[in-house]
Amino acid sequence: MENLTKEFIHSLPKAELHCHLDGSMRVETIIDLAKQQGVKLPETDPQKLEHLLVAGPWCESLVDYLKAFDITTSVLQTTEALTRATYELAEDAANENIRYIEIRFSPLLHMKGGLNLTDVIDAVIKGKEKAERELNIIIGIIVCGLRHFSPDKSLTLAELSVAYKNAGVVGFDLAGAEENFPAKDHKEAFYLIVNNNINTTVHAGEAYGPESIHQAIHYISANRIGHGTRLREDGDLLNYINDHRIPLEMCITSNVQTKAVKDLQSHPVKFYFNYGIRVTLNTDNRLISGTTLTDEYWLAVNEFGFNARELKYLIINGFKSAFLPHKKKVALIKSVMKEMEEKGLKISTEYM
Image (tube, rainbow, N blue to C red):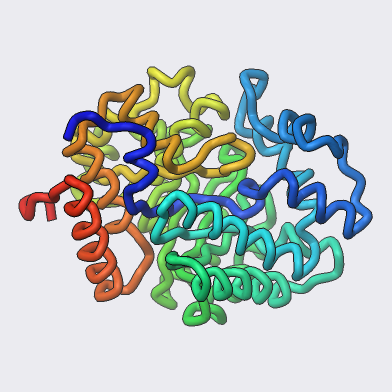
């Protein structure tokens, strides 16, 4: 089973845990929504707009990478737009056999048109529920606090997440530029989240060193780490994460684009996997990074030498790390394992 092809990877059931709604839109949808809403775009030709939005070799940093979000969020200021974008993202995911996806976004970025926080989250949940009815996919919603916003705003979003805990929200995140915006400033929001038994994931160790990951775990109780690219710089912390089975949400293409790593060959994904860390693969932003989850797995196979045995464990890591109730997770993993075995990928019981 070593003749792995991109088509075969596409056919496999997969899970995606780190995917931003506002970074994963269809270009045609952005243009269509802009027309409907009277929003002026820098380009209306699909190819030219895509060239503007997708991070290329000219992208110099995470801050540079984030500039494209000004364009995507400009058309995500109505309930109809948010519902449509959520549904289309789920549809794109389902089309490459993603069985489970967690979609994350910050409601604070979608209030310029007069929507309030509950309007925003209700619209996203409406898109999620429509997708789950019509597509073979399970969707969890993650609310993002933003490092560069005031901690009070993070607390407000935490309160929102508590209110929607059993209505589609499965986790709380802290995203945005890391340097000069420490996670510990937002500990009050995470105190509320943790005390209401809500899952946490934190962007850390992407554009800043392992100290950022240390804060995410020890100050605000992260259950998973978004990216964690620079974890290898602190061996003691790396062992702690490995010992406690804290998953890393790795996004290979995005990490190269944001210069979290100097080039593709420098990415630590295979080192972490070989060391035993629970690595998961994700797109981060399908549009901005110009990638799919199939592309990310193909990179793992083609550039980093993951073999068939390692590939199936990598896929199972995604499902094992999902913010799902245990019984649902076990049922989903059994279903996925059966499907993979039917395609020739058998999982040994030792791994489980």
